[in-house]
Length: 428
Image (cartoon, rainbow, N blue to C red; front, top):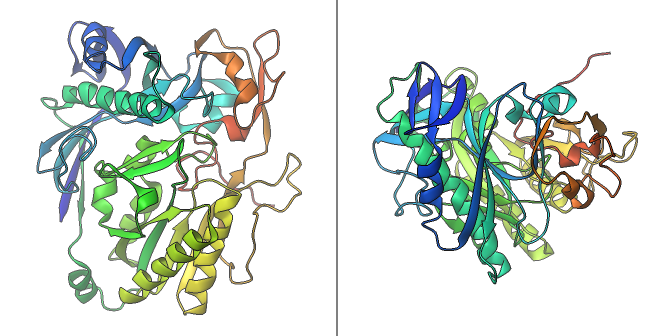
């Protein structure tokens, strides 16, 4: 399977007549996009805005971030099974407006999710301070039930990304990234002496505002499933998780999954990258046992020598993470775990809700409880008072002068457990 990602570098963004790219500047048809989104009769109002890197702009409460793209060759246009008919993606050619993003804002069911600052201290912690963002502050019609309300906002963000992504159809990419990987047996025959490495990606799948979708299927209904890495990079996986902003894997981050890209970079050199197992996270013991057992079974069937396991969320899912680790290690399959920590504001508490002696290779992506002070913004997109009810915020976190205090919990992508952020380590 061969996938080409054509990156069209976006340096700036503006509203204008038509949607197109010229000399690195993305122009978006504001009226056209608004009319397109309001074709969904559940959308009552749309406020579009722009937030650029370095501007003293605060976006709150953010729901999701999506990268604008368009399929040029091959199947899997749009977001298959969601905004388009179900079809397999992960092959052909996709053009990406690299450096641009669609950010959805507003109340879904209740205030949840987080903050993006485009500058300063807040900008240091989120990767989306570096993207040119089109923001969608959406209102839905009265009377929608909670699940329909959430679905309406989620689909609007995806549809907006498709609308804007069409600007890449006629543009010449600045670079083309090529990913090519055959079947498991074919790759093993090519690299018989390299260790076979599988990636187990845990996904929030715990109900309303805690969901992930694969080809439009709510992943809480599936057993762990083997997927070609190209598929996630090409739009097969989208986020419906809107609770802890720090380690939410946004749709944008699924489209640019750091673990997959890093494993691809070592494929055929240091490792034989065998694919991705999408692992649902459940709240029940029976669900956790079923998912961890099935993940081990897939790893054994594929003859994996090692499994990289990334988590989404913290607390309850920590037990799933450690179950997979323990079962794989006891079966002779080495594991590397990627997780953040909820270690208290002083960093001195136990970082995970569960432990296992088998967890000897663990990558920490940061402490969600670390408190940051964010300077007053010159412009706020959304509602700054929502910080009082966000995970990581509290009543009184917004000061009279506009200064905002919060834990990293409230900053989108700040401790991403697939490594898509700016946190690093310090050597003593």
